[in-house]
Image 1 (tube, one colour):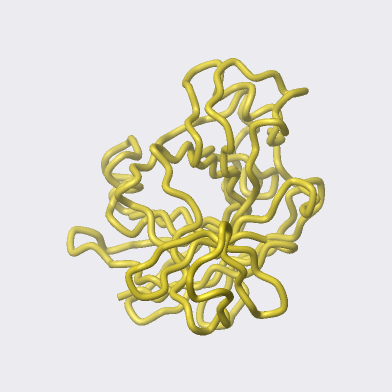
Image 2 (tube, rainbow, N blue to C red):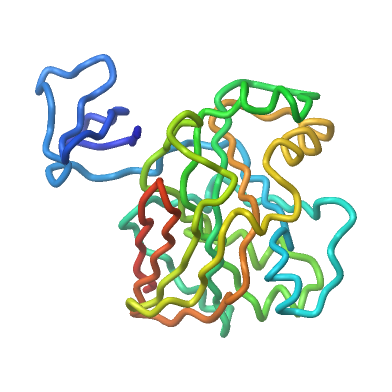
Length: 244
C-alpha cells in the first residue's frame, strides 16, 4: 500500500506498514509515524475518466436500462482533493450528492490497450467520491458543470497494487455521519475494469497518474454542510472528507 504525503515542505511517496511510513527513495528524516504526516491525494491525474451507470443495482434503483456500452464523462484535475480535505458546497447548488466508487490509477502512458493486457498499465486502485451537484446536472442536461466544481473529486487515501487487491468481489460502501448509505460489491459492475481500459484507450491516451472512476452502486444521496462522508473499499481503506 502506497501513499503520497507531506512532512513540512517535503512531499513524497511512501509505503505504509504497521502505522509507519517508509519513504520511497528515503528522506533525511528516515521513517515516519503515519499520524505525523499529512495525507495527500495519491495521484496527480491529467484527467479523471468517469463511468456513468456501471452498477446493476444502480440501474435498477432508477429503473434504467443496462447500457450497451460505457457512458463516459470527465472531471478536471482541479477538482481533486485527498483524504481529510474539505468538500466545498457550491453557492450555486442546492443539492450536492455523494457517489462512492472504486478508482483505477494508471501506471503507464497507454493507447489502444486490449482487455487482456489491461493489468499491465494499472498502477493500482484507490477510493473515489464522485461528488455531484445533482440539481445542476438535471438542469443542464449534461454533466460538466455538476461534476467539475473544485473539491468534487475526492481521491485516496492510498493506492493498493493489483497484486494486493481482488477486483472481482470487493465490498464498496459509503457512510454519512456514520450511517451506511451505499453498500454493494464490485461483482455488480456492468463493465469490468479490463473492458473499460480497452474501451477508453481506444478513444484517448491515458497518462501516468490518470484515474478511471468505475461508477457508483445504488443508494446515492444528499450531503449537507457539516456532514462527514466516508467511502470505503474492502482491501483499500476509507476515504473521509467533511462538507463545508
